[in-house]
Image (tube, rainbow, N blue to C red):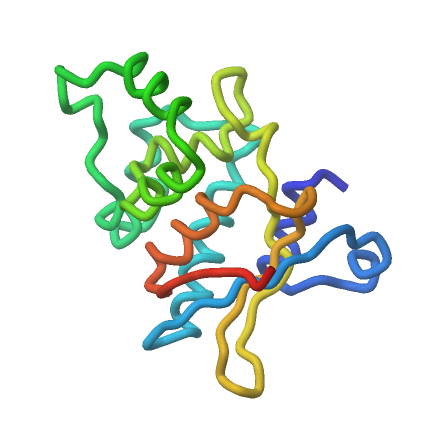
Length: 177
């Protein structure tokens, strides 16, 4: 079964016994919220809409029709709207940043194109380099909300996952090291 198909199945129904036998490294990301059920449903819905299109990746402008308005509204404006933006200079600045500086910059809302890049399977995208896949989600007996992801190891790239949780209404996502 392809990775996207297995991930979609887990989004819609949680892990099954085959998943539990083949499970790699799973990390639980905790977050706060006023309505944890809605956050989990929203995050799962957005991610499922993206994963459903991995085989036929849409043009950038098509995502405006495919993703929920609330998610689009929470994303930062695209830089393409700024004719003075220099992508090369930005990449050079990013590469020169310390991990702490990158983490601070990652706290800002993500642009839709930047977030989608993490899933884009085309030659220009980063989908082949993704380091987390949806595993499960829920609320524990203490009322703590969580989303579990299968990862490639420790540490793993959390930015796109944290933005999905925050855009869905979650607060302060973090995993316990």
